[in-house]
Structure formats: structure tokens, C-alpha cells
Image (cartoon, rainbow, N blue to C red; front, top):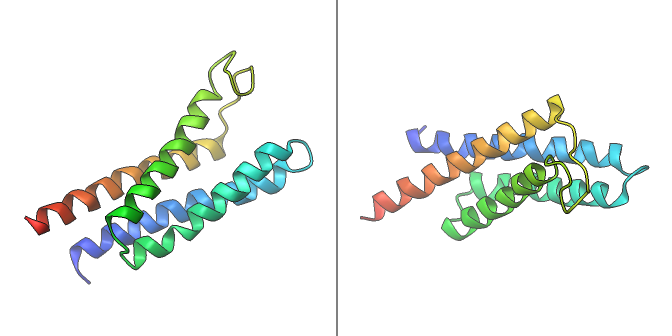
Length: 124
């Protein structure tokens, strides 16, 4: 196995962890909060799907879209933790699951940025 292949597997694993946990959260959200349930379900499915572009190495455009989507998810989480925020009007709690998800998402961002840097270096 090539050294750089490990980066793609690590990125796929990080987004899979986030996605699976978001899908699980969606089922817990649906009875009480339809909007959050839909957000977690759609976002979680997208994150699980993103395993494919990472493993199959679909290229910089796909990686950049993954970075953007993950950054939006992280930003939404951060914003909704601020008291009197514009989305929920109150600061949300920080759970153990949220810490795992956010850590995996930040790892995904860092790994994919490293992949993009490595690919750019190879082209030069």
C-alpha cells in the first residue's frame, strides 16, 4: 500500500464516522424537531456518501465540495452553541457525541487539505 493511500482511507473513515453519527442523531431528532432531523439525515447521508470520492480518488473538485459541506456543518454547530444565536435563539449543549462528530469533521478537513497539498505538489 502506498503511503498517500493512507490519507484517503483516513479521510474516508473520518467522514464515515461523522455521517453515521449524524444519521443516528436524525432518528433521535425526528419526533421533537423535524428540521434538525432532516438536516442530520441529509447531511449524514452526504457524509457517508463522501467515502466513495475519497476512496476512489475522484479529484480536487470533489474534495473541495467535501471540505465546503463539512465546514458548513462545523459552522452551524459552532453558531448554535452561542447564546442568543440567530438560528435557535439559545446556546445548545455540548454533548459527548457532538465532540466526537466535530473532532471527526475537523480531522476530515485537515486530512483532505493535506491530500490537496500533496496532489498539488505532485503536479509541480
